[in-house]
Length: 289
Image 1 (cartoon, one colour):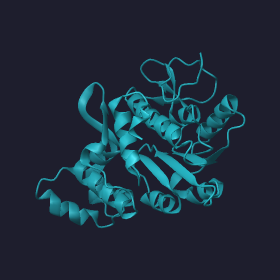
Image 2 (image 1 turned 120 degrees about the horizontal axis):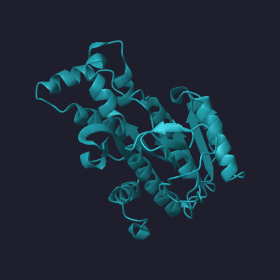
Image 3 (image 1 turned 120 degrees about the vertical axis):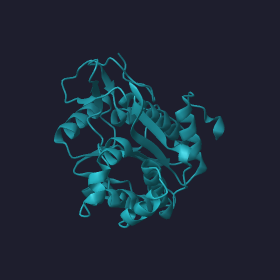
Image 4 (image 1 turned 45 degrees about the horizontal axis):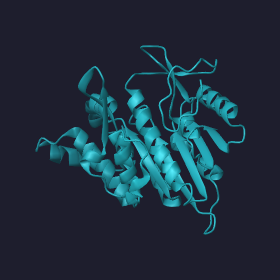
């Protein structure tokens, strides 16, 4: 079976003997959305930007095995390498050596000439190494980058976005674990003043006081977190997102159980247009350009 897909979700792959992470059915929607957006982005930007870098944070091994069926699918990191119009540079970060080893081997098997750097390090500590391997750029060798941050929890350091966003022309697709982690564990995070997980996520050390003030008005916790993250991104120069721009991923068997949101941040209107196309399920339509 061919593994070339340009944004398509790939099923029933043969086991290649390398480490494969275990994923749930709901992850397929996340992969599909990522792949659709990256296909649009890479195709539209190919002729406009001589250098295009893809950065995958919490990249995983490139393949996942569905927990319920045992099927093996291509996950986001390897799908990004397989788009019809590849990026000129790929950087992947994961602190699990099994993921890095498997991903490197899979990319090598697909494309031995791929310009890729795999970093085995915690994402919050990896920014200096990321910047070392990012392509140099100039007026004549312009660089456009796209970053997908796919954490397993809300332990996501906003300084990563601040540093990379200030240094590079970079769009971000961010998974915000607001259901499974923040809402589930909120009481503990709120009561333990030494816990800075939420403060680091939304870039606000005084969030507890603001939440107390809002809670009296029966504010929605998830909406509050989305607003605070949105404010943080606009402070570093990204377009403010509308509430309905955040895409919820829910348990398939329990449609009202929120797991997380996917949120796209760009400095250009095209980012939102591409995101809307990806979310609509429409085939790659570049008539929006």
